[in-house]
Amino acid sequence: MKTLKLKNYFFVGSPELQSISLQEWIAKQMLHGQESRARTRFLQSIAPRVKEVDDVRLELLKKHAEKQKVKQGDKEVEMPVMTYVEIEEVKGENGEMVKMPKEKETTDASKGKRFKVTDADAFNADYQEYLNEDYIVDVIPSNRDIVYRIKDILTNTNETFAGRMALLYDEWCNAFEDIKEDSEGSAKVDKKAKK
Image (cartoon, rainbow, N blue to C red; front, side):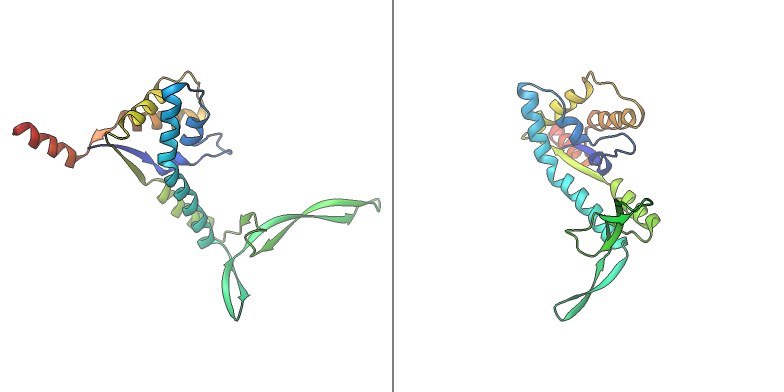
């Protein structure tokens, strides 16, 4: 059986590094007919992994966030601390009321925007380890055409790349160009050839 190996970090964009994820790049391509349909099917097939990558990031943030004891019913539980910005009116230098942003803390996930991480190095180490894991896609008759159309879309694009995006684009292409028989699949092919 042939396999496609995609790194988990392919599914994460970074505005700070001016890069987008594989699924974002594929989604923004202007495609027609069969290529467009292949794109939609490919994006649907990787959607669970994209969600998993985001969920793991969220769980790691919760794990490494500062904790605060909160009363829930008759129990006290530890909840991760989050921060958010609230606009407050304060008196300015001239006595007029001025709106100023003020960062506040909460354990209410519906209000909080960012986790207050206590050990950024530990979070980064855990997250990087996860992002470097492979996501294996078995290339089987039911998805072979889809995978190879995505490979063609990637390798035949007219888009130009620079910086971090150029490196990512090269890695994406290499992953699709390196679709290989796994050792078990090769053994099956060899056995059939000998019969």
